[in-house]
Image (cartoon, rainbow, N blue to C red; front, top):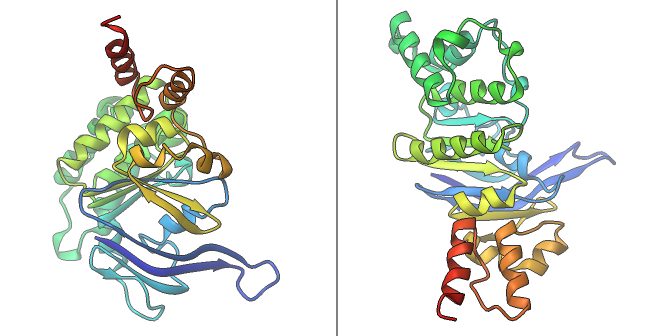
Length: 290
């Protein structure tokens, strides 16, 4: 559903301030993938994903998303259809909240992305807005008529997510999806993302600095450095490369750190463990017969 070939993007091209933010990236992201994108600040993560719904247009190389060819500068693109299929939630949700009320903000995609001949009725819009707000844990009766700018940071993030989900996108892209949420809120967001993959979302892409979340939820992880993808591996393979990741100023999940420490001290258990439950079970199995 997503394919790039030698995708390149340069900020301030042809000036002394030129920055090659995405450098010859060739990747395929397939139906069913839950992809984590990691890398230190400035590695090109956000610039790369902004190409996927044409917020940035490719300067060089090829890109195809959900059947839309986003490569040629002069090619006409049906932006409404593209952005209905490819939903994005930014790192700072307040940047994408703008309406007077939460319900109007959530309804924006329904009112503006639907073809003219298929515009939903007022009743249909309210029903879908209720459903989307319910999915993210915002009670419609409590929050619908409130200003989005009166919400807490976590509530703003949920409102922004509801405004994306209301259009039922095929691809969902989230930049730091759990920033500002407490541990329970983080669990709820990831449980929701996995639930959505069983319904209408076919690909989830997250940018995150939380390796515990990446390891526990993604089936593959792309590591970016200087605009390039330097690794594209399943978590169980990637997080064995502890030294390589440290050289990239990245770390491994806490449970993997503990497992590595135990192994280094003579307690031979599986090194790549991503949950506290798995770690406890592995230690128990190692010692239960002693």
